[in-house]
Length: 554
Image 1 (cartoon, one colour):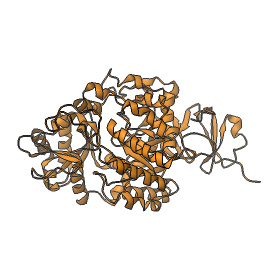
Image 2: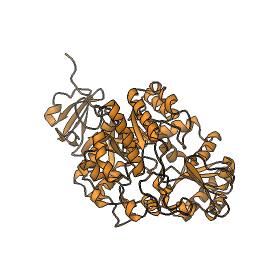
Image 3: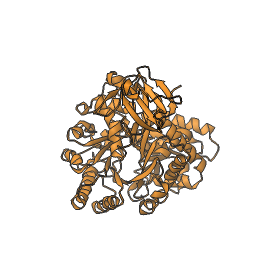
Image 4: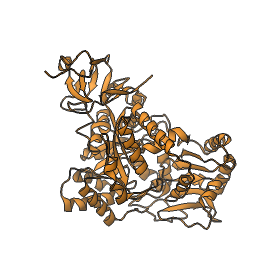
């Protein structure tokens, strides 16, 4: 007679399953990493044997692991382990002081890399006066500081020299070099693809090593587990990232389900093969938990740098003029070809769209493909889904496109202040129409865009979805388009079962149901009964992945 005993039984809990057919339970049993029983105490009766580990939850809340639909694992780990960090709300004076402190400790000639300066600081940093202050603080060391969007960089004169950038250097395609209006001398501001000039300089210098890559990836997985994340989509996975994830999986060290989006075109901030060449290798990097099942397309830039594509013009600018709307990076025909090609290969497409015109173009391309290919089980993503023309809201559901709500910025931030400078207050405030999307039937999925957000703590994002106010207490009293607030039940679905559907893992993760992976998180409170302005204080006490503890709060 086969042994029916479970490997693990969790009992006496407040188990929120995210399964609408049975939302609550008190007990769950696990065997060989999968859920074999869910319900009250009688559901697990008879499943306890001499080798079964029994955990009394003591009435604590248990729920499925978080599914982060948009993160950048390698960059997140590198930021935590090897880079200078300061919040996007840091003042110019603080930024300069922190560089000075780092320079005093750094060996001569070594790079100082860090971030993230706020988008609202861009006009101040884009001056020769600011560059001179950075040069003094850096004491001759080359410096590169990323902004809060990770699309732009500010570098000092030594970094400009090493990168070969001078007044005679032309702007790269789809990017620009900040210059003094009177002299044309570079200010150190590197916008969009210009950021790639300095990033490639650092990469060629040997600053990054394979050992650093391995350490960064291991750190990032541990960080995600500590916040209750047990599945994620890496939103721009170049070959080293795919290899690192597969290596972790082969060694039994990948403690989360990993889905990867391979860039269609080499991004300005990452280097190596991309597009067809990388996609052709995807099966080499598939593992039990590693699934290279998406392609990433960067369709535009970011509003704070006037590189996002909008239907209406930005505010007047002395260089760009009065009627500048930004532009997309990929043409509609090319985007149609990419979506069609990916569908033939069984790959979803994640499309970065920061401006409403980019969203329209992405939906137009998908609409054309739908007219030729008909229905598909693949779910394509509009990544960020932040500014959307009202007429496009309903098209998400009509076309089966997921709104990848990332990063955690559903409240006032330095991002928003930067947008106000380039778009005006009224337009900037119509940011993240989440309730409109929900009511239109769109699939909403939650992502951190870590390390664009300094940490991938989902509870900060969940509170923001519910309150539309900054959980940190900064921008006190201000709310961002409060009519777009969602209830906490919906927010939890967005970060679990919805995101699981979006990344193609709904049969495996996202809810506590028989047959699914035993990925759970134990919380320090019942978040459904927690005051809305205290949700961000939620702490994960224990994270289980496939029934084994992968994080425990000390």
